[in-house]
Each structure stands twice: as C-alpha cells, then as structure tokens.
Image (cartoon, rainbow, N blue to C red; front, side):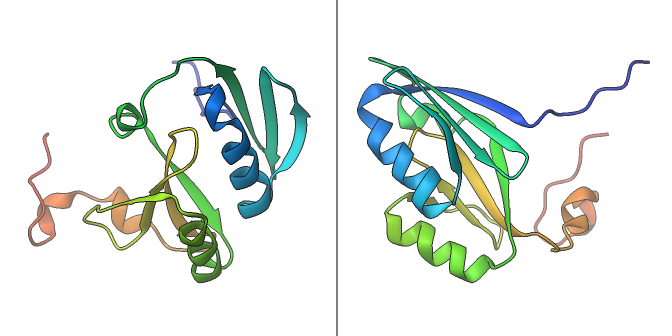
Amino acid sequence: MAKVILGNHTAVFAARSDQDRIRKFYCDVLGCKARVKTDEVDRFQLENVHFVFVYQNTALAADDFLKAIYLELQTDDVEDMKQRIVAFGVKTLEIPDPHLYFQAPGGQVFKLVGINEDLSLYEESTSSRPGAPASAS
C-alpha cells in the first residue's frame, strides 16, 4: 500500500469582509509571517505550516465550519496563548475536553494544546473511560 501523510499546506475560501480580521489574528495573535498579501489571496507561514486564504464575496457561513475538520494548534505556553486568543474575541466552543477549542476569523476551528503535551489519552479506545461512548469495532 502507498504511504500517505498529511501535508503542511492548508487553503480556505474566506469572505472578503473577514480579510482584515484574518490578517490581524494570524499575524498579531498567532505570530504568522505574511508571505503574500493581496486583495485576492493571503499566504501566512507559521513555522513549517502554510495557511492560504482565498477571498471571495461569499464563503461558507461560520456555522458551517463547525461541522468540518478541527485543526490542532500547538504552543509552548498554553496559558499565554489562550489569553491572547480569547482577548482577540474569537468564538470559543464548549467541547467535553479540557482544551480550548475556538473558531478563528475565517471560520477554521482549532484545538489549543501544549507542544510537549502527552495526548496519547486521545489515541486510545474510549470504551474504558467513564462516560465515554463505546468504540465501534
């Protein structure tokens, strides 16, 4: 079988009206480097991850992103980054998990975790944890 891995480039179609807020969040809050900034496309880099925003007059509604994939955002200072993210005014989500889940400008949902945090608990079968649904086998 062929080897498959996830890449480090993401692309999102975003509403043109969100462009200024997206730029401020990704650059000022997350510390991304703006590689390209035009009326049509922004390209941001965070370490080895690249975010591409293609701006359109219409895009998915923010609620539609809540039904899509959630991305993991890692930091070496969870409390500081959490405070900065929340202070920016993002929508936080109530998820039965101790991590901060939030919706960034442009609609993407992220889970904030520590760079060296042991997340192996989330890789195990949930059937042995109290209150967890039985895993489908």
